[in-house]
Length: 286
Image (cartoon, rainbow, N blue to C red; front, side, top):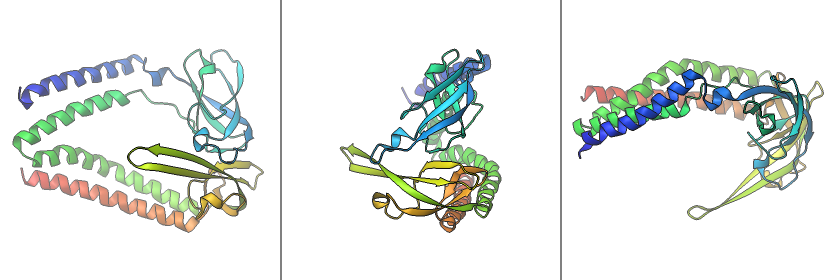
């Protein structure tokens, strides 16, 4: 059986999976659509233990209300479940997700969200159908079809989203100038060691710092970057620059962060131009 013999089978299998996924979404029965999403409030924050794993997250006690029964719950992540809580303060609102009628099976999320339609796997299956068609055509008729087939949609998507991405980056750069500086202190350094047979042993160090905002919120947060010597940073006094609207947005070095966002804008522009050029070259060579 040649490539064109396998193509209908490939498209049929993944096309059917895509149709099932879209059908479930239209019926409103996907996991994402059925998940209950409520607002939780952090009631207590416990300082992470020095040397513990970064994957545990900051231990917090959260209260929330089940909208179907009106019952109040007070729970703790205690290292899980859900997303790793990397920034916390008493009174912060976070997302709490759980299956219908099962509030004890909760998961925490750092941000409040309305959720999606559960189309992730369906969209991926549809992409595999498209990728199969483009691959077979490229093998049969030459590599320029691969440039047009793959780079063309990517370029169109990039050109559509580029203005919004640039506005978002510009807004973030502008927000750096409005940040407030307060003193902070590194209270712990978290550590995890991963052993891989191919790459060897890798160590991840995550300092934990605390600072108090001008309005009195005591913030405990992971500091993924900005410290030159994370291993020996415990007890170090630092200056924190945070956004008054959201203390979870903070940096240690404003100028370095500004340069990083500028480079991010450049990379976005260059990437879109490169993909667009590849699609144009493929179209010309057809």
